[in-house]
Image 1 (cartoon, one colour):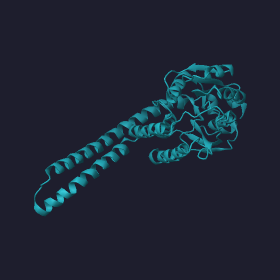
Image 2: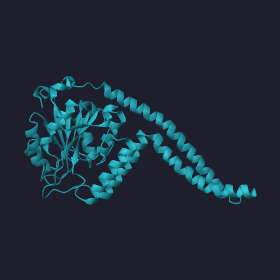
Image 3: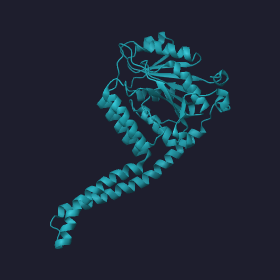
Image 4: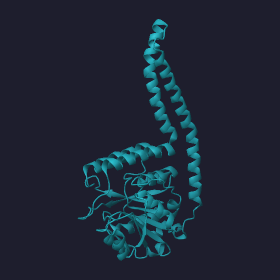
Length: 335
């Protein structure tokens, strides 16, 4: 990376941690060696194993966040810390600090607002078979609902511009925060890139905090809420269609009997089918109205994002930063 492009940039490394005493020290030291001018911030999320002490001994700035959950930690980090470039990673040692320089280089050369370090081999080594299957299914579901901009929405190794961080209205409380970041970029059609990186194994004594079913249910719920907020027409149209199909199912035999005999003997069924049809129409109307509201909100977010000035070092010609040999631009770049 050309030093002239980064000498005047304030780079912050953000490490949310919960009971990572066995790994946080080497992780902090690795980032200090890779990015010696960067400020390294460790936010301890109620650890009980000495994580904060190990991080301080390694030279990190340590802050405690009492509200449990990665989403709460990331929201606090983004609010507290001012920088030109942000790098976020996990404190468990599964992401190589040496790759941070490549993330920064890609952010500069692609003039992106977010670079996602996609995890090479994550499906083969995701801790448990349920996690690997969940990764595949949720990434497929994301592409179906929100578009094909990302191939690994759960990667915790990312680089951001200041404009992304300060325009990101984080609401998630847990591990769903990565999904929300991806939807934010897709919603505003921000320039993004993906960079395939090696994904390491947890060392002895370090354990995953993920629960296959509990966290999977939270992520599925977050998908539904984000779809409701960002694509309300599709969300309410799908529910409307469900009510309409149910209404037609109840209505069909009643109508068949009426056309055959001229009588309606099952009046309660007819009333139910009519009520379901009315609900279907109301849901469809709500989707049409809320779609206009969602577009207005997206426009306001976009205006706020455009109002945040890029550092002068990020406006230099692309050739100054050298090639990003492993970068693969996201499809949102073309938007």
